[in-house]
Amino acid sequence: MKTSHSTTSSFTGAFHLHSPAFGSRAFSLVEMIVVVAIVTMLFAVAAPYTFSVIQSASLSSAGDTLMQKISQAQQRASSENRPIGLDFFYYNQDEIKACHAIQLVSYDAASNVATPLEPPVYWSEGRVVLLEGALSPMFSTNVQPINTGLAAQEPFKKLGATFYRVVFYPDGSTSLKIPLRTAYLTLVGVKNYKQDLATAPANYYTVQIDPVTGRGHSYRP
Image (cartoon, rainbow, N blue to C red; front, top):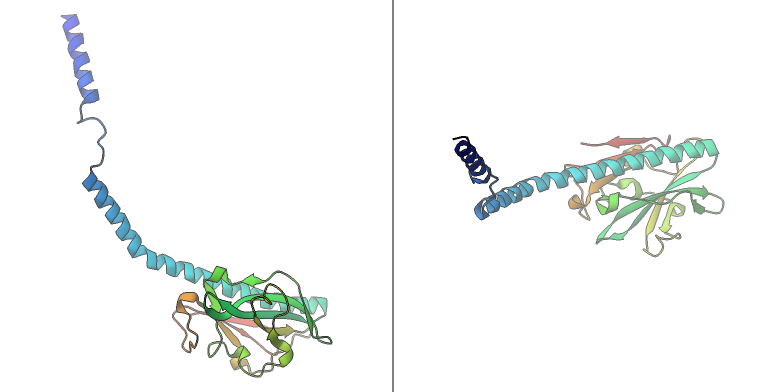
């Protein structure tokens, strides 16, 4: 009787171990198709919001960097007792004519020669541009010839870039000879770019430079 009971128990244990009711069950083809369809739909819904967040982050980073460079130029001009320029380079990139890079330079007013102080800063790998025109009137009127022209330094020379320069002097003044109300520039994401953009899009970053004090101010929606 003991032997029979042991055999029965072994058989029952084997049944439980190998029975489909207690083992793992693979997905069927229909279930896999449903899961893939749901995941694809979620990606399609989330993608526009994700792209918008990336654009917003790039815009904030570019605007903050511009503000930092303005402050840095102002501080170096004062501490080093010499004019420091901030060059804005305009050229075509991905069929967009706009400012794609900036660079701090040491400026010699006597010879009108500028020497780079650091590598250029490019706007967020092409996701952000600094506009020309109505939303960036700082360089549209009353710019002195010595503060603009064709770029003489590489890599901008080979790109046929045009530069605009704002010079910060040790006494806190700047080379800007324009009213405060027109001393500003606007950054936008490339998806909002238009050549003659006259109305600010929903997301933008505007930087104003006080011509008298050289201080930067930022404006965001």
